[in-house]
Amino acid sequence: MSREIKFSLLYRDMWQSSGKYVPRVDQLTKVAPHIVEMGCFDRVETNGGGFEQINLLFGENPNKAVREWTKPFHEAGIKTHMLERALNGIRMTPVPADVRRLFFKVKKAQGTDIARSFCGLNDPRNLENSIKFAKEAGMISQAALSITYSPVHTVEYYVDLAEKLIKMGADEICVKDMAGIGRPVWLGKIVKGIKKNHPDIIIQYHSHSGPGFAPASILEVAKAGADIIDVAMEPLSWGTGHVDILTIHEMLRDAGFKVPDINMKAYMKVRELTQEFIDDFLGLYINPKNRFMNSLLIGPGLPGGMMGSLMADLENNLKSLNKWKVKHNEAELTQDDLLIKLFDEVAYAWPKLGYPPLVTPYSQYVKNVALMNVMQMEKGQERWSMIPDSVWDMILGKTGQVPGKLAPEIIALAKEQGREFFTGIPQNEYPDALEDFKKEMDEKGWDYGQDDEELFELAMHPEQYRAYKSGKAKEDFEADLKAKKEALAAESAPAVPSTAPAMDTTPKQMMVSVDGEQFNVTVSYGNSTGSAAVQEVKKEEAPTAVAASAQGSAAITSPLEGKFYLVKNAGDKAVKVGDKINEGDLVGYVEAMKTMNAIKADVSGTVVEICFDNGSDVEEDDVLFKLA
Image (tube, rainbow, N blue to C red):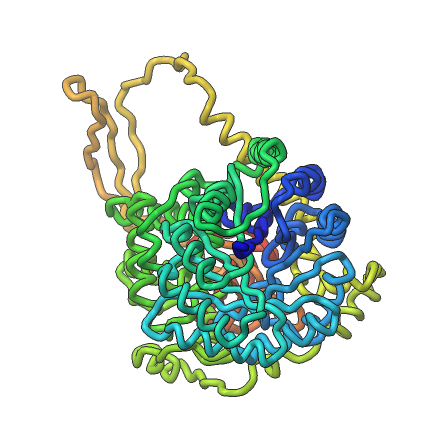
């Protein structure tokens, strides 16, 4: 009898690999019964990763969403699984151990069966608690190997890592090929090596389709002994997402494997509803280029799961960079120009940062540093001039050990800045914090929620949860959605013939300022060329600047576009008006590309004005602080 292969539908990851958001809970519960009717899924990925932060950004309760979304699958006997980032829980930064433990307890109570846990650095020390806490909560612990392809990531490296995780108590292994860059035969050897040592261990294979290797890789791992394959379906398969179940189903059946039948009527209904959600509003946050496979992704090895946010980041940073280019009379870049420069810089920077596996959050860290390098170099500045604290934590070993060697220039830069390398256990650097969050909830009169799930949300996502509770999150989302819809309507509106009166071509006198000097000029309109001619009449002295007082004689500006915060953590001390600031002092943060970027003063003085509220959107070169 032929060996059976089972399928898991990545309905959450389908959306996050394509764009910024996932469907609302009413949409999820609408599509769930039809996913069940398809009859071909042993498992469905329902939550984890950025899923719950997105609920909060909608102004939607994530706990309600998880409970209602997992329920129909439970009733049908389909297991649900979530994605968990080990030391980082389900956010981008490290999480205290007591919050991590509560996370598994809450998710099990809400209906999640399997915890897929991965460490972005493949450091077993970070996964040990994930395995322990999942099993304590009664969940199946599936430990993931974060697959990346480099000189230090060998077959032996991954087989040995799986061995360590199984000895720690992992019930299953996921071969998580998050960028789809694992070479097919090489992946087969990894699976075969694990199965040789542990024939009965369940191995689930996860891959993105972006670079094009995925179907061949799936066939190789299936032949080597993989038990479950992660798949997607139209209209969110292929491209930066995952392979479509129809292709993989036929390929594996033809290869002699036993695969479940697919109810095609239900498939088409899920396809129809998914497209309906895209048309409703989610498509406004999906870059059309994410629908295409791209072999250029082989080089940088960036995961499909971050490509949706990457294209949004590029769009925002391109605007910022081109503003600077125009201001300095330089040729503007296209998005493709910036994308290629970014991919080349990732390939350059990645080895120098010690080959961290390109998976969340370290794929974002490498990409962010590479993008900052490109932005700085395009402006004539040096590489490595903007490295966020979170990236330094990775470099210094505070979040785990990078698998490769750091470049001498990175080590030298750390020493130059007085940074010390860390060799201890990362979790010990992040003390328990639940009592502090309980105190905050008590003071504000907030309910801890069923199974302490509301307490958990505050502890895991403090800023987002506070914005959700205040209503600001929903307000900001609705304003952003309205702006996007208006922009789309304006783009698609037919051109209206101009009814403006003819331009007055009478010569005009005006003042023009050039490098602080004032020129009185006459602007006239030549009959022969139709273009404006500017003639200098006389040079005049610039008016004397008003002496700085409460307006400030110096300013600290934002080095990039993003959200401005005075502090990174709730207990940190914020800069306030009247504080004396010295050059080099940390004064705040700009959150961009899922990273908190430290802002340091480049001048000294006394703060006379803080120009933006906490959480405000800022653009590059916006004045954040005025100093006197």
